[in-house]
Length: 170
Image (cartoon, rainbow, N blue to C red; front, side, top):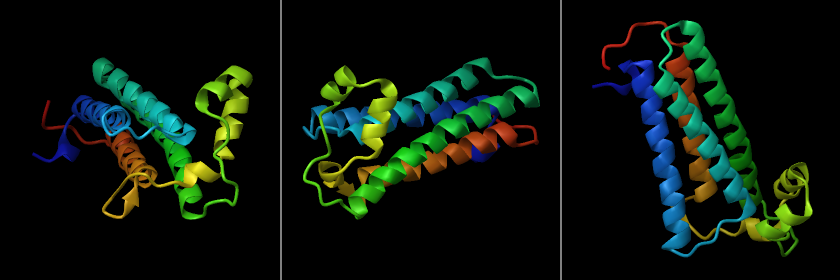
């Protein structure tokens, strides 16, 4: 069974389940392995949550027309692109660490003392601790793996939303 031949609804359900699995693993790393997320990691989680929500809405709605499928596919792709940007910036900071010793203030302090736009600006200009690599698998850090997953999920969203042929499964 080739997942690329599945129906729009099945492909979007698969995307939702992958996002849930990735978020579940992030929580496992945080609470079981005791690796606290930096602000970049929290933003990546928010992007996975937004992407997963769009996948779930598309799967539940299951639009019959091509316009509805395209809309969900493009919206999910936009969420994936936002995640790619965040994960890519985090990977860049890890590969080319700045000389400052700190990532900046903690998440709670940022939210309490800034507007949301100020929080985003502060996080995306992160320095120091955000370059620390606490976890890696096959030579890639967690933000690098997040980037890979955002690319794959974005491709899945576009494929499901823009394809023209009839599905065989579901």
